[in-house]
Length: 533
Image 1 (cartoon, one colour):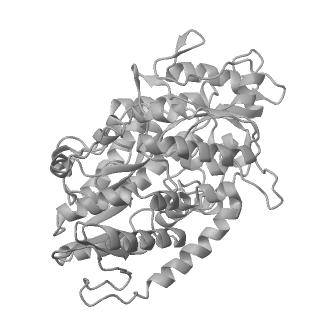
Image 2 (spheres, rainbow, N blue to C red):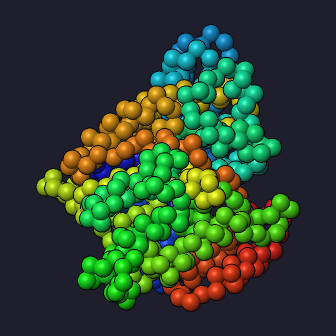
Image 3 (tube, rainbow, N blue to C red):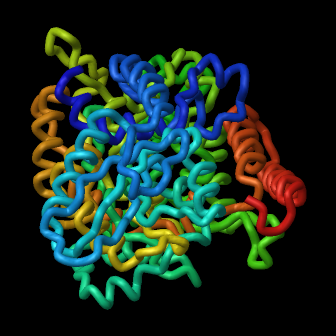
């Protein structure tokens, strides 16, 4: 495995465990995958993908055999592993705290090693008399295992790090951390306030502290922009572009100058041949329907009454914009074009130079290229950068992914669990193993310096403006694209079908299609009834 793959392997392997990859062939047979064109959020470079399958399978098999634990520890489930080292500096009664891992990153071999090392060191040195127990469960059964433990009165204390989908698995069961933050005088000024607020879930309060963040931004190919005579894109929210406000409509105009036919004419020129396009200005990449819609603003598909389907105005505009960009202005790629290129599950049009722009996240970077065995780069693009997303109705909106540590309401020792959780979040060994983009300001400079050094081997001389990520983290889409909904599995199928319809159907009545989407979602909501998950 080359150094670039290794840099993010902790994060990517965790994602691979959390969501099975979907091949292009499978999506052709089954269009209901939530990601478009055979992609999932977990797409990996080809070499790394081969390793992932072996590691994940071996890990699951390994964890089906529990590790022996001291008699004083809670009884493990059939798939759990517990390790503990008794505190050596404790002069009072020991307080047991269980750390549950499996709903997000943390169950890969290199991460397990770091977690065990942390637990051993923490138990030997902490002066709070906390005895920390590690419980690791394969992702495929983690949610059910955790719910069973909670229902049986055997809930763990700390869970994490987990992303939005993991938090949804325990929706309503997470402790409001605000009182603990206050009583422990925890300084949250080291985090972007908008990211902290993102984790405030209505009446549930502050349900976690941010650990890793992945805000959405706009990827663009600097070489293609240069060939079209276009300047670099804005890196600050509010900046204008070529004397125009940086809006989604302006992006569509720019994209038409980057869409070219086989004769070299772009989509804004007379004589452009829309039947023979060789490159597009824009594509949505790995984004699914909700992730892309959230670039226009936050929203929810469930109305205030908790049972009625709705289509937020911002999302309706997003999907209408996307449809027009594909079939009217030819600014965005259709599904037909993507399939003619025989894209594999580990690539996007932007990654192979066939689209000049796409919404993106830092977990996608390895798909742009990596190092071959001989040390040469296999990247098909050379010069790229990132920019802030355009505005809709005067506001910038970034689909934000946040991994957080949380504490369960049903846990028995929330005070001790909080102290242990803070120690986990501060541990450099765990941070290195998880490999994500740090939420804490003080950790970000070293992270990006390390990332730059790795990327320079794959894209020599290319400089990326990482300040864009901090800028976009100030503008998360709220409610999130991953917010709770009714009948998630059924809704996922409906949304996937809707996106495929947009991408494959010219001359569509978009208003009618949106009405049909709303009706189809309502059918799914009515299947399980109000409050069903």
